[in-house]
Image (tube, rainbow, N blue to C red; front, side, top):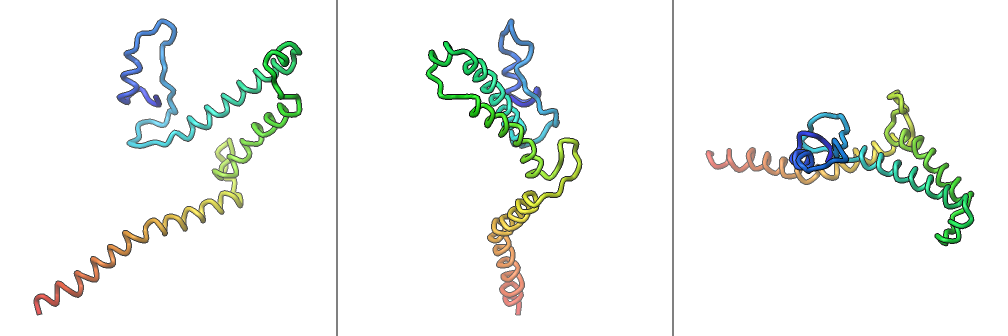
Length: 148
């Protein structure tokens, strides 16, 4: 669960355990009515990638383990995964438009995504805007005509 003060957080804290003091992963952003789990997903992905790399390094470095696991992973494959993992930070900076030091980083990708978001938001709002104009039209034409 993501925070101490949620219903799930309370239930998890009540679970008996001798091994863990806390099972709560907190993003430290405080209470929000709805919060996407993007940070948690990105952190989990990075952690699992690092675990995969470490386990693969152990398997690849020992002939007996390679034979026992039947792995096709080799040093080149591991270097590619490690390179992609390292480059993902740069790509995330380009997507978000901020560096890891919170400095504005204006990129073509960020601008393109913002433009697509603006276009999409106009598309999503098209129906409510049409309803509003229809209501205004009815108020300005039908209701005054009733009193004439």
